[in-house]
Image (tube, rainbow, N blue to C red):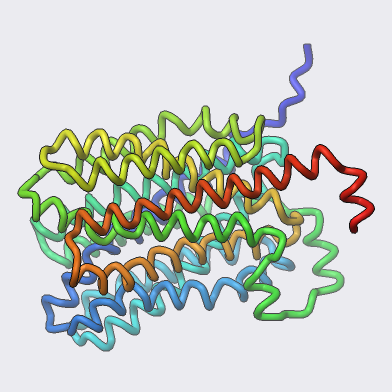
Length: 402
């Protein structure tokens, strides 16, 4: 019997996945440590907040330009430029203790981050067979999830037990490994690339910023990331408030369960679509947030982290695959850029709003309030699911209404 299933685990896909993993680890390990570092060298509370928001703004602004570039350019050079720029920006941090300069470096770092994540994600879409997009982008998303989960805890350990320069050195080392993997990857060329090169499309900032066909799953991604933002910003602080030393157990259980569940959730997406998967995972993430908010012992971190790994860890790649599946292949770079921008914007906006609320409520209350974002994810996904089922049942009526 002939196996007609297109191959997924090619050498190029493995190298790209590893390169993306080390890219995320190099960047994310700095994320929770820059605010306390800025404060330690005399930064104001406003400047500490700008550390989170400035890189998000830069990443969002750069992505439309990169998405447009990817309509006509082969993948390798833009990917290597993005990886190299991330390295340069990381190297700059220890060379000054002037807060204003560090914020400028952070803005440039955000631009490089927006460049790199857009090019890497688009290259993954090119390499993954369309029939296995849920499974393939699920595994690619695992490199993002692991980087976002493990790297912050490693960075916190290095910053608290050594110093900022040691943290930056390790981040640079991981960035070099990422660059090597990405340089060894053999990238695919979409069919539309040659057509676009022959007749280059005109650039429009807003058309390159927004892919209307993918706007709904991107909006849901924003809600998901906003809910996750409370953990990025306040998990370590919450552990200190509760006099618990097992914060790392949340990250460990999260990564393990996200990894174990990924093969099943990716195939479920390909078989059933995104709706049931995202609705189920949003409820699991909601439960995980409430368990975390009442943590009084380290085992709460394990249970909450495990559930959050299954819930949030499965939703993020499913949302990316849903975003890509809604658009045309030639606009996948723009859709990818919009997807990553929604994550950056969600986390960045969460840091600002929760920072204001934290003056009036406890950290555990922030987790509880953030949990309701996952109920909104459930409701909006359910709404889209109901609309789709109604259209599927009455296709003739829908055609007449067009």
